[in-house]
Image (tube, rainbow, N blue to C red; front, side, top):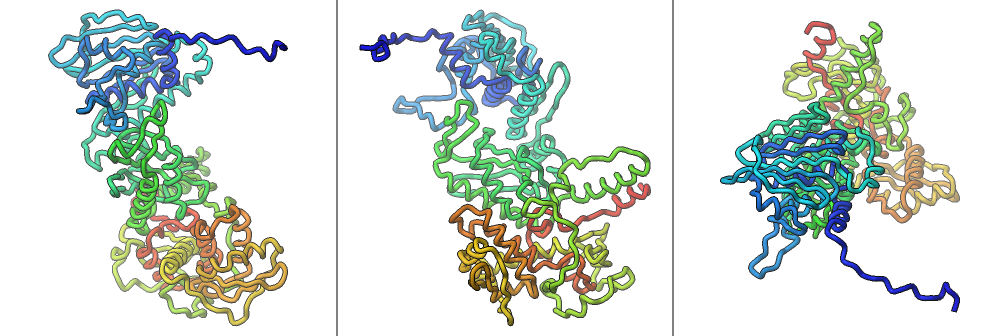
Length: 632
């Protein structure tokens, strides 16, 4: 028998020593200093702390300290907490069994402490009510103490845990640590997430002796919670967040979400919490994206902090060793709750747009003044205009020119085509408003500039409206309303229009003819590589059907094979509204038409942004304008 065919020697099964078991457990939970801080802060929260301070050196690798004013531990409790599989947070039921799904705490102090101590030098100082303070030192499984200690903590009771030389017992792990700056940022992010979920607790973080942040405690109210979120996510979020509050089938959702015009270039400002625990769940992140997909360009991301609370038995928090992922028993219910709640709250915001739109405009004006003084250009702090003002194809749209076709005027305005041929509106051409300007949130139209922008006067400022972007959203919302009813109303063309396409493009259009018909667009095959358009959505009026068909053919080429058109309803309808029915830039409007557009915007949900996430108007207060001219 050749050597390669011989059976291997029977392996010997051995019991691992406790220190090896602890180091293996530490490898699952203690990935980096941020994981240690997270475990210790969660323990402090479970102990009822109302003030938690964290201090780190060299990103937490050299030293990290977590101090709280919770209930503390006695000397015997500290020794027991350093044992494997020891915890005060799981209590057997009447049958003597422990339900691992019925978890009401953040972590397990008896699990984290021995794991951390096995890869560091750890000192625990604690004082419980009615007990003297005691101290325990642990290194590589060797325990010294407990011994009496002086107590200089934040309160009468509490715990102080100092961890030095993290991973000194496993030097190979140190090779995989990132730079000090990266580790410090990870610690900062972990603490901020916990602070967001616990606004009633004060938090402070120091790095290398310098204060990183200090958050004071707030009342346990929505207003107090928003104050804490604003301290972490920024003042712009606090000023432009809408409250979220709903419940379905035992699952409660609360928190705040930013207006669509308050967005970022990535999803780093989306925070999700389940029963107070910060999680990073792809499903929940995708749900937020789905809720906003009707309002944002594809490369923009909303800002939100959402809190899901439910019975612990409805969610499994142990699917990941670090408890950063969760699994819901009924994920569909949670998904529907989040999408429905976000969209309902966004609808309630009406035409409201974020204040950052005006702030960015003022910043650009001041930047132009700075150029004349050789001053540096200020950078936008919330969103980048070059990436936000993009169309649904991801490209920055060119400056729009007057179109050859005649789109319908805003709904509610008499369809008198002669009005569109009138001279450009001048300031003195616009009659005085019959009603006070303060009766209307968007004011009364006073002028049209460059046949593109409507200038309206409000009680305490002015509003500048992009007429194409605004009417694009109005048409889109009307199409959605009709679609939810009997379908989009259509108008037959007296002379059907034949559109020449490639054979593949024409086939894609014809394959979806029935679905397009529900959206008011009636098409049929007209030989090889051609499509005949017999009816268009009535909302569009006179339109360039050929351009619309070509745009839809390009859209369909990007869809997954077999994907139903309704699954991409927002994209298709948004593009149809944009290219078909919206009042184009370059179209002259008279005062009646401009005011009709403003009144429709006030009555239409989501009218603060167009279908691609661009703001439809900018509001400037008199105080802002006076500052531009140095009057303030």
